Length: 139
Figure 1 (cartoon, one colour):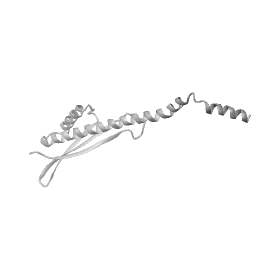
Figure 2: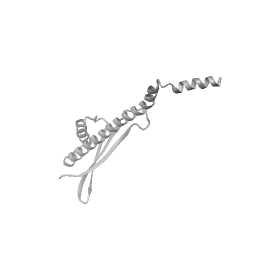
Figure 3: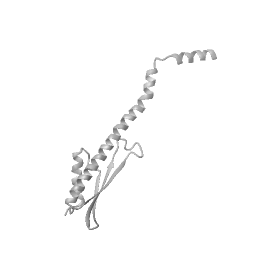
Figure 4: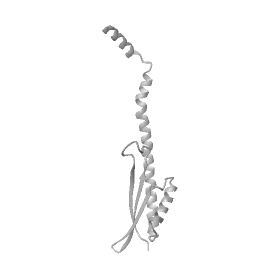
């Protein structure tokens, strides 16, 4: 009985007909996860750069037009996001003014909720990007 089992196992260990399929099955899943991970990180960096661009343009606009409302600033920033092919619905902007050493400043707080491709699959898949910018007000 033991000799027969040895012969059977010896036959299966020498048989290499499906080795390529097994090796592919072992390597394919980590490779596919890595490719999608690189694409998702690239997309998140694109969103971050787009929000940064919109915030910079909005603070420049707000420094000249500081008497406008937060809704006007949000509309302006959403338009800049659309220029970068990003949805403006996840954007929240609030503005405030303050004086320091007799110089008036305007501050813009930008919050953008980033939805990832893996939303709902992982508990940490959604996050937000916050940016605070301030500039002196042009009189």
